[in-house]
Image (tube, rainbow, N blue to C red; front, side):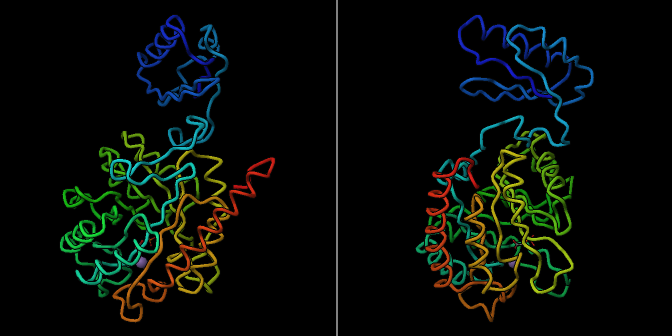
Length: 349
Ligand code: PEP
Ligand code: MN
């Protein structure tokens, strides 16, 4: 349920406002307050069926009361009309509302030399975060599973060398202590509905990169975000990384329409992974540009110094110089999209 309150200002109004909030909370419900220039919105979560909208309307500061039909509440834009901006590494990097994430790095951390070399080159090309898997969710148990704790250690070395905040995937909550100095914890596609993992991450305050599952709807993605948010952690960046369809020409089918759909439904930022969605290095640039054009809040791109010999996902990995070209082109596309939006009656993205 959302309660729309006339803009609150002045001691009398503030008192009435906090009386209303306390009254709602006294019934065992949680409130979420979003202050705007003209209205303030109180999002109410819990068993709101016990609230009578007419009774709430009788508070004189209340303009309107609406039930939210979508199953996701805290992730819903109706609860929080302004875009959320996720702050990473103490605000060193921001994502959302015009702040663009350019995350790059190898699929897997392999050696110290590899990760530090790639970190330096992607930083020079304009990346603002470093990715690299230490724990790898592989289809085959015989494939390289990642370096585990040693991989996280090497990522921290690369962070020390370059200052780039780190994004790396967690596969099991038992490894959480290893992620203390990791800046963004990734929940991979295969774990999008690992609800126990999501609940535990909800109890942390770490930014979470939540990837869409291979066969999950946008509503299910937002419900997974809701699991994390309902535990108290609102620092979530969503990621469209392609879904399974009947098409086999690409590794997955990149559902770029998820970007405007999520922007309409939710205040959370959404970035795009053109590497896992296409599975092929040469398709990464066109899809990166398309993502920037449709308003994505960032990209996560796999980059390897020696793709043919990568231990994981070499076919979709860009060489550092190819990434530099993509990063430059994305800047141009973002500027063009901004120009189009500035001249449009309704923003295109
Ligand atoms: C990854 O980012 O390394 C990864 C495994 O991605 P996904 O979970 O989207 O397959
Ligand atoms: Mn990969």
